[in-house]
Length: 277
Ligand SMILES: O=C(O)[C@H](O)[C@@H](O)[C@H](O)[C@H](O)COP(=O)(O)O
Image (cartoon, rainbow, N blue to C red; front, side):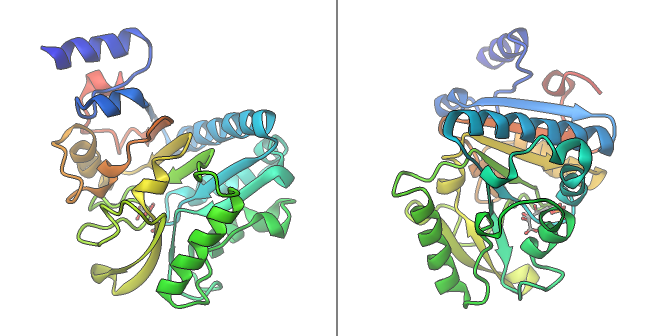
């Protein structure tokens, strides 16, 4: 009964929201799920949302702090942001770029997330090099994690680090950033940055912890493609099993949580959650 009433209330308020899980704390965070008919529409809408958040942050604080995600999905978005239509709307010299996770491979390795972002975006805009904070992968995993955590704490001048925007992807196994099932970063309650060994990829990675991510003012999950439909359904409407589906750890303490999806990725979500199909 409560669930149905809540959903009707959410929809009436125009926030196409969903109960996520009827846990009081998730109801504080405003959740918004939007489904777009094509990849272009998804990327355009995400770029527009990023611009809106950036302009608001610069107006409020004189700067915009963003954490980028890696993998395939955001590459088109980054290229779009580098293009004339969007790049001109950003105040790049007041924009500070970090990463939600990084693979422990050399900076110029194709698998390196910062390498991908430089190729798709950062090398094509006028952002000061000092505004870019890549994960120091030249160090071995554990010292790299400690150094990155120090850099982030110093950047936020000892205040609790709260990014204006954290962009996240979603893996088919429910991981986000490098919060993979079975890794000890999942329930981490103290550290902001952890080094993890991802067995299925035989690779070390450095990741923001959910503790850090959940302090953000805005979080955008960007997911596209039919291969994400099953996991999205499990994460968004399934039972709360965050150790199996780590993306469920992402529940911003006070910020906005956006799920920006294409139609294919949203195909298995209930219509009353996405508002259309
Ligand atoms: O380092 C990474 O790979 C990402 O940060 C990772 O969390 C990614 O967002 C998901 O694995 C989805 O990846 P795709 O966009 O390639 O599906």
